[in-house]
Image (cartoon, rainbow, N blue to C red):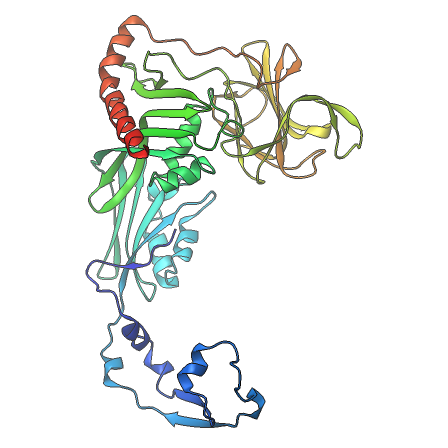
Amino acid sequence: MLDKSPSQNELPLNNQQKILAQKSSKLTKKTIRWLVALSSIPLFGFVTAFGIAPNVPALENIQTEDVVLDLSIPDAIHEAPGNQIFWHQENIRRGDTISAILNRLDISNQDSSDFLQAARGSRAMRQLKPGKTIYAQTSSDGELLGLRYFFSNEELFLMEKTDDEFKITEQSIELDTRIHMKAGVINSSLFAAVDSAGIPNNIATQLTEIFASQIDFHRDLRHGDRFIVVYETLAKNEVKRAKTARVLAVEFANKGKIHQAVYFKHPNGRDGYYTPKGESLRKEFLLSPLAVSRISSGFSNGRFHPILKEWRAHKGIDYAAPAGTAVKATASGIVGFSGSQRGYGNLVVLKHNGKFETAYGHLSRFAPGVSKGKRVNQGDIIGYVGSTGMATGPHLHYELRIDGVQRDPTRVVLPTATPLGKKELIAFQKETQPFLSRLNIMRNIHYAASE
């Protein structure tokens, strides 16, 4: 996102100043051509009316003549404000390089070259993570004046231009923790609801992950579903929001059922989301391998195949999604197969705990390192949506196999994670109570406001 807003030291130009701030070379010999209508039609009436009023002479009968006036340049033009300074926000995209980002910021070729040379050994510039934000200060003529990038666990990459030299530092920083409480209602989609409530999209993504084993966000959302979320952000004074941190507590009312989750970090460092009673929300298998998509074809013993033009069983679920959408492993396991296989096209098969397998077909490509025998964890990206094999368009074909037989993943009861022990439960109740209290407060406010 490119946000070209003047810095606090610069006052915004009014419309007249914006016009006068143009380069004088474009105005010095400027001429204005007036079209004068030699008739009784009032000038302003003609300009504002886009139709032809009754009793007005036809336009082809109106005589016109060209009047050319040479205008002198007012002194105000030479006194217009000069080069301005702006702060920009540019999101890092998948596969981005710092050179590509500087190009999107319209940085001059000379400054781009000088910066790339100065930052050649920078760790931060080698850790451009998709979704993170780079903040850049530039002049209106493309001069790079400063750059900030928060990377690798609260570390700051800072560049400041002094005497035409780029001075670069990488340092640890302390960010201020801010707790937010928000609520929303589903009218069309989850992401539309969080936008309406002023909640970052990053939080919406976390909600889909937290309840991935309880709510199928592709099929289960209903108009009028409600959610309340308590989340924290980490911020620095110089930048309004350096990065969004994590959801602390959430309540989601879906199809008349209340789902609650609260964040807890174990003394051994392991963390996750639990019910208020301390039951883990993590199951061995996620309900869906895609964060955002729609089901285009469900599990069925009889479906008309769009390519083979015959009725046959469809032993999986098809998720329609744009080509290149990341595909996640629904459970931890070992890669049993990674390659091309007949109608599946590019296919990954994962083996889980002996009798369970999952298959992911029609992939456009595999994620780096996904090869036979490799270990993957639940939620790891294993490939990307495509249309290889027998596919009429980009989608993911997903299968759950138990003892080698395909089963409907929406109807199988899958195992859950181990619950908290007695000692852990005491620490859990002490640490999560403040989050749950905020959740209760926000619920009372939200429902009172809606009545």
